[in-house]
Picture: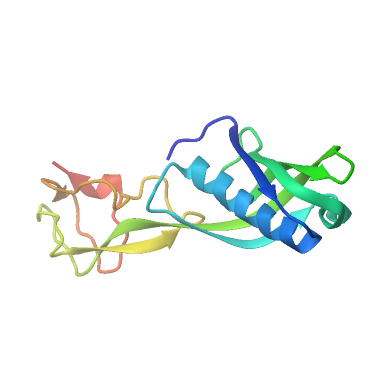
Length: 167
């Protein structure tokens, strides 16, 4: 996963009512988080969305842009900056707090794997797991396991990590 210092998604979405702006804002937040993940297989689910100026959403005409703040991880509690086009031609910036549950496919042992056993689809399955509790060393399913061996015993249901594999 690649983290850029600033992810910027420019959106010019026409909307006529506050409810429509909220819907457009959710879509823009989803798009900004997805772009920051740099993983086509990841799925993003927004648990909640809170605005620093909730009243601005009611008077806004459209969403101009949404960007992830520098240094923010694109999962868990995420802070974003949104710019809204207001009635009268002005723009209003506000902060958005989003609870984003991001799930990615990882390799999981479908049965007990003994030490030095070859790793392949017969002994491993892919499952989508949340990034929040996932080790940074977990082997994502977008990475090939071809030619790898188990460096140690792996129990059924255990997520495969780099330290569990060897070539």
